[in-house]
Amino acid sequence: MTIATADLYDERGDDLDSLSLHLLDLGGRVAFDGLVRTVRCHRDNALVKRVLATPGDGAVLVVDGGGSLESALVGDLIAGSAVQHGWAGIIVHGVIRDREALASLPLGVKALGSNPRKSAKDGVGEVDVPVTIGGVVFAPGRHVWADADGVLVER
Image: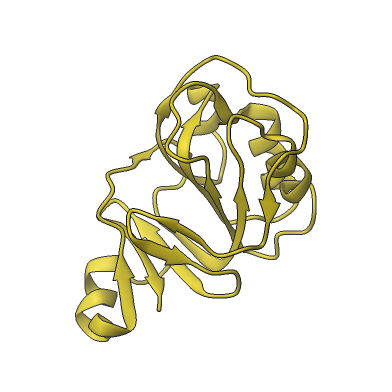
């Protein structure tokens, strides 16, 4: 990412939505951007794993876990797969696990926090559907930018 979100917002303002929800920077890259892909799931990360095991081509996976803090939706193995498959980052409206391992990966990861509890693996959820987090719509194919200041997405 070559432009800071604050500068980008100054340039484009009303063309962008700013996520007011506070997320922690938990990956090895704080600044990242790319086209949005989405997964909506609740305490089940099978679809997250499946999507991140496909070519990312610099995209950002936005995972709507409903804000649940009860079990992790991304861990070191899934994040490692994302790196191998060329994903720029993951934004999780929920929690991750293996925090120290994720911090060492060349991948942007933003989430509400961490919890060592594993999630279910049933494959329940939806892929590449618009998801709304904190009043902001993340639609597949739109561009998202993230850095230490926050998250912006095209309207």
